[in-house]
Image (cartoon, rainbow, N blue to C red; front, side):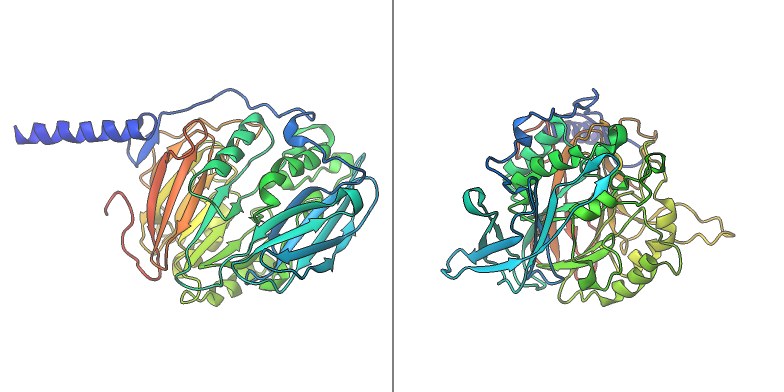
Length: 470
């Protein structure tokens, strides 16, 4: 009698949890596979005359304004924008909210050509020596086309500094993309900057890699990225490598348009770098640059990981595009060679979480590793490992390729939760030991958490934070 009561009581609890999460889920060999798929129809790009792509009024008005961190510590900001009619001014005027004195800095201008497309004039200007935790206003443009924006610098780097990140990947510029960005903006858990895990405009989806889609994407996301920094990761759709039309230089549009402070972390290339922000140390890797032994990215990461001072920045976060652990048939095992090269380092240095995109669905792993294999021992099964990171795939921004709905059955034991729906996530760091993470699917209310967990820091509080105790 007692056995059956417990059994049906457990079923009832699971039923309630399913309803609270906005749908049903299946318990499988691994964790939870949600059966909730909101939209299996192909996503549709918004037309060029959509209001979200509107060109600002006035002759040569600055457009596509975006910011990102401009140094390693968080006291600088890179401000970027495009002018179309002529170069115009590359000066940024800025001042603190409570100040009266205005400073100004002048940046650099560049252009590029891609097949039959010529870019506008791309401006990059770095504002240095900013004060921590301060709201700044800034102006770009001249005369009647001056545009004013603002941003807030992060708190001073420290071990118990609270800070909240948004996480978005594979956004594109469809109607679903617009819903994703709106949900992020309206989420009551307010992100202070975005960790962006690659695949921006999807211009390469169009014939001849229509670079006008880079311009429209820049105008689309301006409403967020002009006011808070997005930390950039390059994906496969940033490659724009197309020898058939004479375009042999990978990442050409991306590298012209999106600058990052790579030299501040000793990197030789802007595709891999690191920054400190509040209590987090963020490492960005390139899935589509060489990473085998002796390559620049390999050598940089080998020297970078020992530099991380967990007494200063307890939270070690890695961004990449191609996931290492993916139980979707879409892009299955594409990240395997990078995993083989670097996973043992991630375990050694106790990385807290790895965010990736590429697969157009959502998945969160348990803390697992697969580093015992040495060719002859045959030990090649992922195992629970409390020194290992949680791997989160969040390539569900809403792009034109649509959702990746074909998941492997049964669900692997290492997979804690997975669902083919569009959405975004937030990670709210509370102190050196705890951070609260949640994923939000697009079709639910802004405050609904479709998946969540409390992260325990691997360095300061290495307790088991899995829902499945091992």
